[in-house]
Length: 69
Image (tube, rainbow, N blue to C red; front, side, top):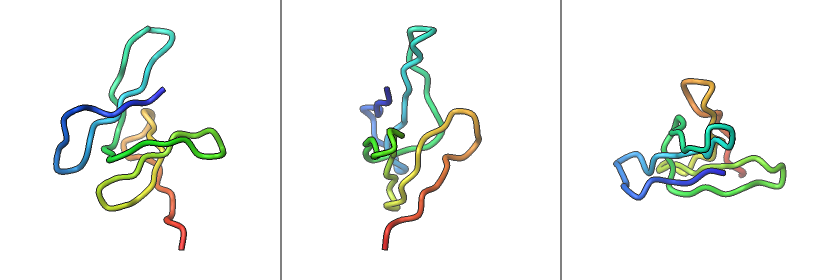
């Protein structure tokens, strides 16, 4: 499960992921204005520039998804 911060920065809101094993929330890379789930079951975030990505905690930068034309 992913949620957004309540405090907005110039880049958007922080993204948090629920860790079922540790029973706590951890912040992940990237900022977003909104989060949704795609047909593939992956969480997708939309940033301030209108770019879609899915947040990952194992890399320094979120994986980018090309905008549909």
